[in-house]
Amino acid sequence: MQVGRNEKDMIAAWPRFMRAGATGARHGAWEYALPPPSPRSDPAQISDNVPFPAQRSFAMPGSRAQAFVRFALEQGVLNFGDFTMKSGRRSPYFFNAGLFNDGASVGRLGQFYAQALADSGLDFDMLFGPAYKGIPLATTAAIALSNHPARADRAVPFAFNRKEAKDHGEGGTLVGAPLKGRVVIIDDVITAGTSVRESVALIRAAGAQPAAVLIALDRMERAGADDALSEGSAVQEVERAYGIPVVSIASLADIMALLEDDATLAKHRDAVSAYRGKYGV
Image (cartoon, rainbow, N blue to C red; front, side, top):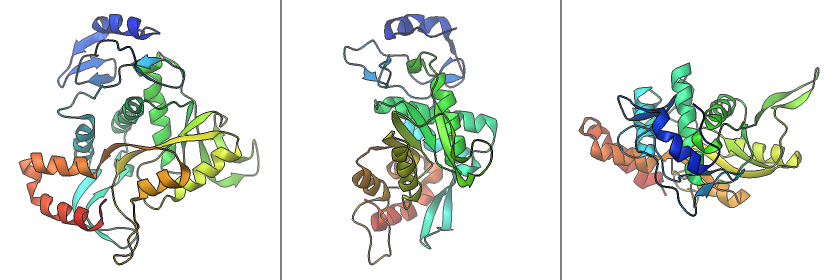
């Protein structure tokens, strides 16, 4: 069943392709916790001006953000314990998006990325995934967006880069659709902002415009040595440096909310809270 090409048709068609699922309603592979809201006079827009209801979430209890946190826990992507980070900092939790490593989990991850971008209301024309981890993330997000009701079955171009320039065939470092228009950079987290800086340079060199950064988790964490912490978080520094918004599926605040609400995770609450108090923003 195809979704209508405007909001009125989409809402009218909804009952015909909805069916009850174990955790909520489902549109093909797409799941929602709530029925679509009534059409609005000022709907949020995607770049091609296809309107969509601004508030939707996946079919899991609570908000989209906490649903994603639970999903990450179930997949072993989010873990609690004692971890030494690349910076040498010891953290009571660790998020490793590389453990979304099968078709089902990556497909579900793409839906979360797509919904976060849709909820943001940002205008965009295509996606860019920085090598290497951003490559599958941009791919799955583009697939999910192409199946999203808001896109009305319109293709979502995407591209990515190689770390090493290719000296044969088409050559160069860019692969996929030509970089043009408003480009959303997709990654898992922002730590030092290196991949964002490199991505922005590539996008601008191609004559395109960085429109936003879309990440899975905002750690809401300041960088630097304990006696010389940055003023803002890594995400805030990226926003200030490049003048573009950073959209996240979830944040440390959502992890904390889950620790407060879920008794089975309560034993981790104090450690994560202390870590947030020391390094958070």
